[in-house]
Every structure is written in C-alpha cells, then in structure tokens.
Image 1 (tube, rainbow, N blue to C red):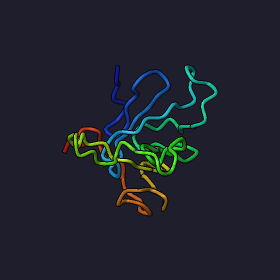
Image 2 (image 1 turned 120 degrees about the vertical axis):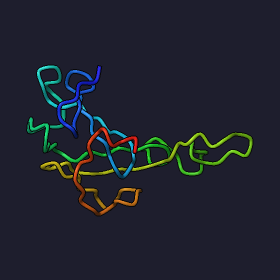
Image 3 (image 1 turned 90 degrees about the vertical axis):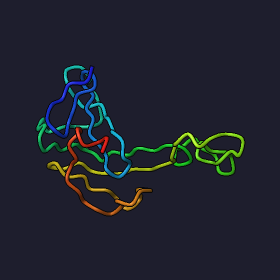
Image 4 (image 1 turned 180 degrees about the vertical axis):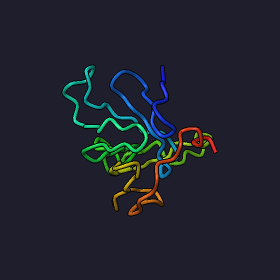
Length: 126
C-alpha cells in the first residue's frame, strides 16, 4: 500500500520509495537502506520533502536494457498487425539531490543534461 511521505515522495512498500520522473513521465521507485532493507545500494538522507539518494539511479527499458541483443525485435518496434500499446524504450540516469533531479547526458528523454525540481506526485497525471 502506497503511503505519501511528502508531496514529492511516497513509500510503496516498506523500504521502497518512489517519485515522479518528469523526463519519463512515470514514477521511479528504488529500495533504500532501512530496517526492512539493511543492505540496499541506495542511501536516503531521510528527508521526504527534499530527498537525496546516493548513488545515481539508472532505469532502463526495452532496447536500452542490458539483456537486449542488437538486431532482435523490441517492444517499441512497430508491428503492422497490432495497435501501438504505448510502450516506449527508455534510459533514465539521474541523481536526486536536495529535492532536485539531475538528469545525466545518457538519458534518452528530452530532459537529458538538465536539473529540475521534483514534481509533486499529485501532478503526475497532468
């Protein structure tokens, strides 16, 4: 069950937090070190309003995923016999520091290389 921790951060289950990514236009979630997940890679400073997570967060899907093989069909490849079901391949690589998202240059979306404020979760559907 999702528990809102602040306008920009929610706990999706014990030890897992999520925020809205304006580059991917969807939420990203990560396991953070806690009583429930003591050995996790991401450290959270505990501030729900202007969070900082370390190290960087890398989200990959479709042909950006490490197990996709060049030349193989991908979910994003149009199939004339089927409708477009909305899947978009992506890579999002960012730091979240003091309530700001620093998108690295290897992101596949239009916010690559930019730093933006975190977006309230309530605005994610807009």
